[in-house]
Image 1 (tube, helix red, strand yellow):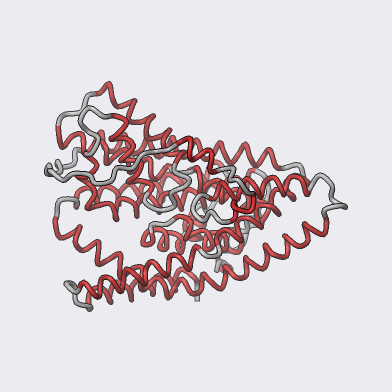
Image 2 (spheres, helix red, strand yellow):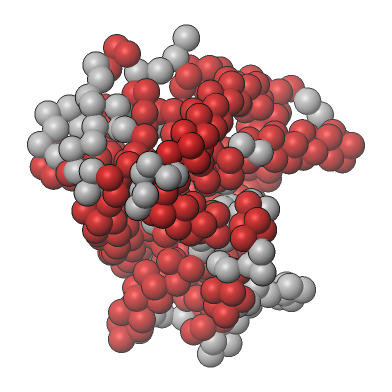
Amino acid sequence: MKVWIKFLLGTILGILAAVILPAGSETLKDAVTFLMTLCVRFGRYIVIPIVFTTTIVAVNKLRQIKQLWRTVKWTFAVIIVSTFLLTLIGLLSISIVKLPRIPITVEVAADVFKLDVKGLLLSLFPESGFSALAEGSFLLVSFILAFIIGWESASEETMFKPVFVLVDSLSKLFYNVAGFFTEIFSVCMIAITCWWFISFRTILASGIYNPLIIMLLVEFVIVVGIVYPVIVHFLCHDPHPYRVLYASTASIILGFFSGDENFVLPVSYRHAHESLGIRRRSHGFTFPLFNIFARGGSSLVACICFILIWRSYSSIEFKYVFWIFFASFGFSFLLGGLPSGGAFVLLTILCQTYAKGYETNFLLLKPAMLIICSFATVLDVVTAITGSYIVAVKTKLVEHHSIQHFI
């Protein structure tokens, strides 16, 4: 049975469980929340080992075949262009479509997120190199150490061959472990979807955020169903661009309901390699970077939400449109340490940066944070898979598989 079918069955069972179980039971909600948290932690358990070892192998191999800097250039080009494009789509969409205003609330923010750029930069180089493997959220910390080891191990192949062989074996081992984990994820989907649907029911029942939900759904269909396939078709000369979307199905399901980008990585690794045929030396390098920096989905959603908040208070002034665009675009690159909830944090940052009485206006959309982050995550997940495929094609590090052989 295909992996995505298992995930879909788990999703259906989760929704059925949410419908059948008593809605008002706090004990039940606590139990479902605990199971969901346990499943997400279980999924993220293997992320650092597989990212760290596979990045070392990827950098080593790319340097040996003299494709490292070509891969770097294509990766960051795709990251920047995709983020720019998604932010532009979000801005144009909300400029054309006039969503109903959100009723003003008087809720007071107890805790306001503040972006600590200095702390973020300092965290890249902890006091001990071994501490890089203890950071489970900000993958750039372990990625940098892995890059250094991969680079140096390729400088003296004979001397460091035993080290490379060990890391190569560990990478394959953790990949197999991740394969086992992804099979368990289909069962975890029951708890995750049950928790998600219980929370979503409350959002839907209010009716306030339904126009926003519909708009985000349309944005998802446009980007994933039209924009990305067209780009893949013309940029990669691929006559069947929807193969990439099909290979992303399991990651889309998992990303949407979990809202956690790190949680999706083991599944994306498998589909990149076994379905799309992206070689390990390519996806082992590109996926962590897309996970860290390619937050165009979060930028798109935050841009839409910020303008919706603005319109709920007053009419928008055209002269601030460019500020909204570049602020959403620029701040999105600083969300690497937030595998979940990044879109709402970006919205918070926009409100604080703009100020003028808007510092806590993000609270208008706080009740809808779940669905906002779900759409942002799923767009970022599809961007990572599509971007990695484009880079692999452009660097000729892909072996195309027949769609019948997709996992």
